[in-house]
Image (cartoon, rainbow over all chains, first blue to last red; front, side):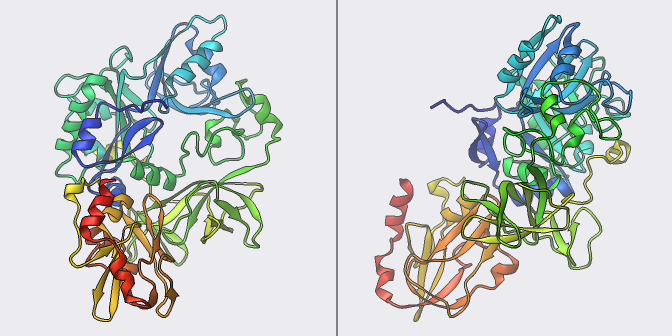
Length: 421
Length: 131
């Protein structure tokens, strides 16, 4: 057995009563004393901070850096900001690293620090494998690839108050937040230097990325690993009057499922990356007919021989069926049509006359969000949103609805100006 | 997660190996889950209850608690007929997290009252939790 790893915030988690569990071979907090429900709701109504320093980063530098990434990433770096608009300094993009057979190695966010310097953020324990994959496909291009695992301190602050809380500890917040649109970033840390600089009030260099994994407004923050605990504590103090909570993996999972975001190696994994809600991660042309560039795995995707469909769903109450060996998806007629990938409860939503309502939006008088189960199923056939299927663990059965989207009124794309005043 | 020293134990209750408790109130028994159980589960978001009049043997599954983490089956520590269910839990399942002893789950009329005596005392249950 491989010994589990811990993050630099491990001691803090334990001191603060976290319920810990293994994730990606890291001993991580599931929730703190406040409980996962309060943590989930804090991110919808105020803000939450997450220890994401188990995630890995790979540095890709050199004259050939862009070429290598363009060869390996499912997204077209030459037109990912719109047709003919290439990735530029200070912008980042979500994509997938595929094998030749079209299956997923990992998903990633690629940051263009400078024209010949990129940071690739991948999932826990994936730094080595992605680093090797990029090296192997480097060809003759001049590129230096470095696995930054254990050197990057990463945490997220997410929720409508995230900007106002972060503002309190940043040296020059006006300059940071100016035009900091969704999927852009400023600053740098350690060897990950970009064309802009952002510092905390105490002088710590930080990279602030307008991204996240909750569907809500917020930021992913990167610092040198020894600066992470001080940053975590500064944000907690800055947010103490705003209802900021430290949040564990349970809230992260329920928030991201409600936002229809995939968990790598669970919702995307060892099957071709096709027929799923995340087509924005592929290099499709505007008509969605053809790919705009070659990339590893493309040939399998083009053939479209894979005939299974990953679909989001939401239930009618908080009840869920745990994904696992005995779990399956049935048609209303009782025929087995697939498996459950993720099933969790988004606790900020409920149904009124069948329609999903979030506490983040306008709610009818007397509305109490009891939560709805939601997640992803992998089915043998495509089912249009609005139709029902049945989840079962062999004993219990619950009806759920195939959905195009789950939690309404998400704040991730709100204009930054309105969120930091 | 609570340390053993932080766990709360009920007054006049006996425990099962599955972390349910039973407590006599006159002719009937109230049934719930222990502080250890609710702490392990995390926030409870849904309680599935049996119907009044349902009869179960000792060890039968009589309902389930859904937490943010998982679905946990509830096993009856003493066999009997359900005479009441705690309807407050349908609207506020989190009551179990707040106080797992005041907030009983079902009340039963035991078919064999001596089964209560076979359950673990607080001391024996503490030993079980020490592992």
